[in-house]
Amino acid sequence: MKDKLVLPTKEQAAWADAEVGVIIHYDLTSFHPRYDFRSHWGDVIPASDFDPSALDTDNWIKTAASAGARYAVLVAKHCTGFCLWPTAEHDYSVKSAPWKNGKGDVVADFFASCKKYGVRPGLYYSASCNQFADVDNPGKVRSGKKEDQERYNALVLSQLTELWTNYGEFFEIWFDGGCLKPEDGGADIAPLLAKLQPGAVVFQGPKELKSLVRWCGNERAEASENCSAIFSYSDMHDDGTTERPDSGDTFGDIWCPAECDMPNRDPYRANANGWFWAPGEDDTVFPSEELFDRYLKSVGRNGNLLIGMAIDKRGLVPEKDAAEFKKFGDMVKNAFSAPINEKFAKKSETEFEIASNGEKAYVMLGEEIEKGERVTGYTLSAEDKEGKEIFSYSGAVISHKRIIAVPEGAVKIKLKITAFKDTPAIRFFKIYKRG
Image 1 (tube, rainbow, N blue to C red):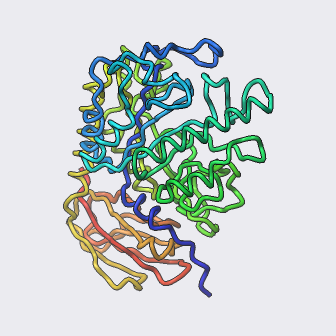
Image 2 (image 1 turned 180 degrees about the horizontal axis):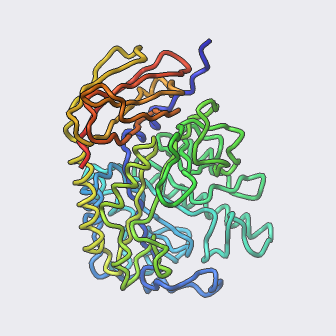
Image 3 (image 1 turned 120 degrees about the vertical axis):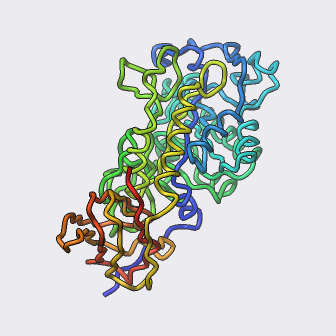
């Protein structure tokens, strides 16, 4: 008996194909790296301190593209409340900064650079935390007064309207920590988003939206070995955050794939900032080899990889960071540009066999997710030239992409689909040399 198939929206399918993105952090804290806003309620960093000497969004997006990123998410407003666009709601924004004599708009520049380099744009807006407005997680005013909450909710909706109407179509919209529901005191964001940006995928957005993506459960960009793109609606909170986000539920009822985020600077070394730049922390930049390992543990496990990009005080990607981004992009390109062999077979087959050349290899598997996540069990095995089995692996999820390392000596690799909800629809079965 066939199980009911959950299907992605066309936006979710396109998002899965994008595979790698960056999330760009730049705020007043980039000029005050050790500033803790929760220790300074009522004492915000002056907007006049936002004064980069060489801010260049082309530099950011060119670097992202060199890493193989197909989309970029700009943090337009982080927890300080300072806005990277000239919001009409208040003066705590770039319009009060000496940068470009108050005439600048980082969001507009970012969108222009994305268009120039063919990278799809997205924005992060923290509705749950705003030091300037005296609001902390999960999006409630610290005073507890109803009138203050209503004022803040109106601010959120007005600023989101500005962002979602003035810059074009978004690829992804990011809510860090979800969105407080109206019945719990939050702003009514869902209908506004559905109206103004219906084509965007939404990270941790209101539960009723159609193109949601979820957090993988850690900031190491490590998905579980069997990371389903499907989720149980009952395990999703109203604000868009999730229970058990790591593995999903292939027998669930909503398509909600995992986005695997990580800073490009190690936040656990000597109390480093991680997501934001700080001077003297070049030694915390993750090397390209580490980024490649996280690629295998995110994209290679049916998630998307979202890498943090810390912008320095000048307004540029630091040279060491940029070099590692480029090396990482080259590593992925070199590893997966020319397969040793690939199998084109009838989509309905459940057993596949492909020849290899005996070198260490990566096996890349993928389903046609537009037809659903059909496979629920499979085995991958490898034989040497004497016909002896030298490798065996069992898995439960293939979905958009699965990458599995196979040892040296394999000349024949077999894939057997052992369980499925409906007739399997294998998109690719490829072998690549593993360095």
